[in-house]
Image 1 (cartoon, rainbow over the protein chains, first blue to last red):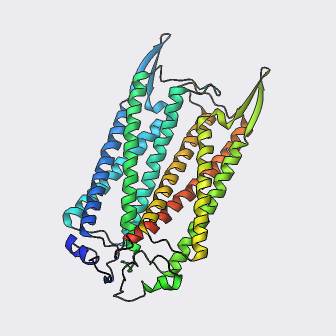
Image 2 (image 1 turned 90 degrees about the vertical axis):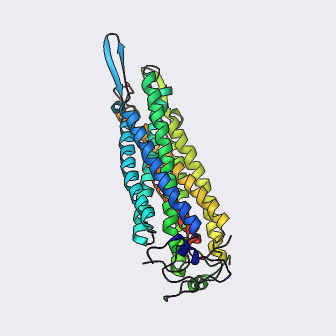
Image 3 (image 1 turned 30 degrees about the vertical axis):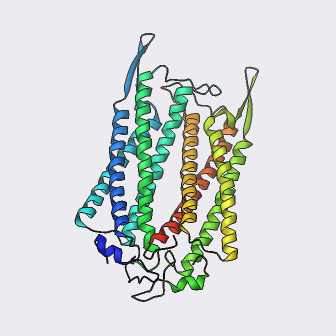
Length: 207
Length: 207
C-alpha cells in the first residue's frame, strides 16, 4: 500500500492488545500523528528556505568602505572565505528546501503518503547531509567572526570589527539567520529519520 | 516485551503476506539485522572513543618553541581557542562514547534489547547532540587551521604554519582523528535514530 488517507492509517494501530498488521502496513502511525508530522515537515522546509535566503541576501549585500591614510578599502563577504562558504551553503540549502517543500506540498495536496524505503532513504540521506553541511558552514563562519571580533594576540591576528562596525553587525545578523536555518535543517533531518525508520518497525514494509 | 533473543525477535517478522504483530512487539526486526545493528553500534562507539582520545592527546601534547630575535615563543593548543574547544569536545565525546559503549556491551552480554521509548529517546537525543557538537568543533578547528596555513591578506591575518611547521603538522593529524571520530558519532546517531523510530512502526510499541 503506497497511499492511504488518515482514517485508513488509523486502522493498523487501532487500540487492542493484539492488533493485526497486514503486509505493507509497516511504518503506519495514527492519523493525527501523521498529519502533524507532515505539517511540521512543510513548515520546517519553508522556514529553512526563507531563513537561508535571508542569510545569503544579508551577507551578499554586506559591504562597507573605509579610508585609511587616503587609501580606500572596502570590506565584502568575499574577503573572508568562511563567509563566502556560508553564502554558498545557504544558497544550496535554500534551493534544496524549496524543492523538497514543493514535494512535501504536492504530497499533502494529493493525499500521498511516503512509504517506499528507497525514496525514504534518498530523502533521509540528503536531509542528513544538508543538516551537517549547514551546521558546519555556520560553525566555520562563527569562528571567523570570533577572530574578527576578538583577534588572536599569539598569532598577531588583529581585530577587524572595530574598523568595519556596520559590516560586522550585518554579518552577525546573517549568521544568526544561518543558525536558525541550520536548526530547521536539523529538525527536518529528524522528521525524515522518523519517516524512514518507522518503516523498519514490526511488519515487513514495502521492499 | 522488554527483552528477547535473536530467535524470538525473528518471530514477529516471519515471512508471509499477513504477519501478525502482537502488542508490544513494535520495533522488532529480523534477528540477523538486530545482531548487525548492535555489533555496529558497539564498534562505532569504541572507535569514536579511541579516535577522540587520540585527537585530544595529540593536541594536548602538541607544542613547539621557536626563537625570534632572542625572544622565545612557544606555540600550544591553548593559544588558539578553536583548538582548545576541539580538545574539550573530544574529551567529552570520548567519555560519552566510553559510557555508552559499556551500556551497549552490557546490553549485548545480558541479551537485553532496547525497546522502551523514553530510553530510546534519551539515547537518540544525546547522540544527536554529540554528533552535531563534534562536527561543529571540527569545522571550527579546520577554519582556524586554514587561516593558520593560508592567512588572510585583506584583514592582515598572517600565516603562522610556516613558522611552526611541526606544531601545525601534529595539529593536522589531531584534526584528522577528530574528523574520523565525528564521522563515527554521525554513524552512531543514525543507529540510535533507527533504534528509536522503528518503535513507531505499525503496532503500538511500549509506552
